[in-house]
Image (cartoon, rainbow, N blue to C red; front, side, top):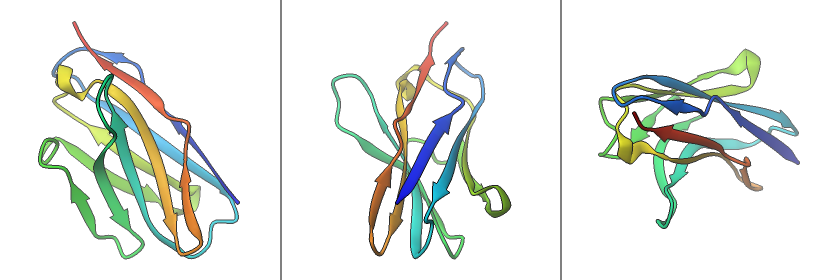
Length: 115
């Protein structure tokens, strides 16, 4: 049983920066990867970034060079640093932890990029 809590979402101006956090608690074992997804209004959920237990990272083409995923193992927290934000980045951002026993989702944090 794992609980994930996202935080950091807010209203931000185009070109601005924001850092999202995903704090995990519970029985965190057999983890394969941690992911950030997002879902914009009226659109399907998409994978934004992924980091594996080995430290490998992957990014959607739309965010490469602007977003960076990282983790702090001591805090059981994964971060998504978002720079040069665009209106099309507006979405609810979700954290998902993948383990060999199952996948766990957070409740999401809203990011709105607008002037």
